[in-house]
Length: 144
Image (cartoon, rainbow, N blue to C red; front, top):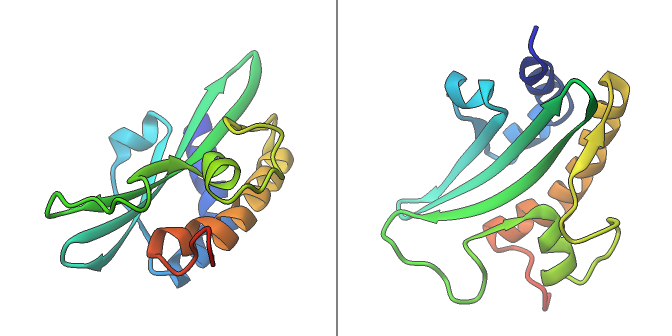
């Protein structure tokens, strides 16, 4: 089993139900999965697609790491001026909400095995559910 497959299975086990309950589905793309790129999508309406991307980097001699990117993809080519169309979860916390719970603004979650992977997914998932998902769908803004 590849390290990307292990990551995908852990991702689905830890966050799959929460993302599904929020209306997100994992995009079927085995080629991207083998490259460590996992995208969840939710269509808001005809002109807006919300995306959550988990990008994992693995190396046999160093800790593996991943980051979470949030994206609003406008089908009609219209981007709202009030918020960026793409931002990492860490940058959203630091730059948009001023929440400095992560060590740095360009943070990647690191892990060395299944236990620390699960812990990292839980930590990122709490922040994703608390800040990322509501920001994506517009129910949470910096001024609210």
